[in-house]
Length: 63
Image (tube, rainbow, N blue to C red; front, side, top):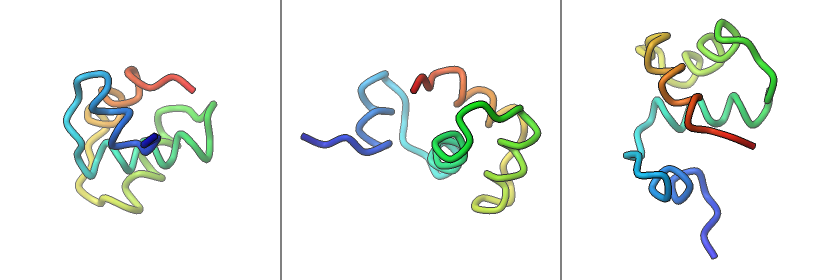
């Protein structure tokens, strides 16, 4: 059974994008991070990530 981020995104009807994967990587390492921490961490992997993109992704994620 596939349990990757890509599979989980598709299961909830979202497209798999690099920004979303970056945000999910940060959230998995820091599940209670604030928005600034998420954006800073995700930008290390995806420098053009905007705060709006990061919060749009994180609202669909639940551990």
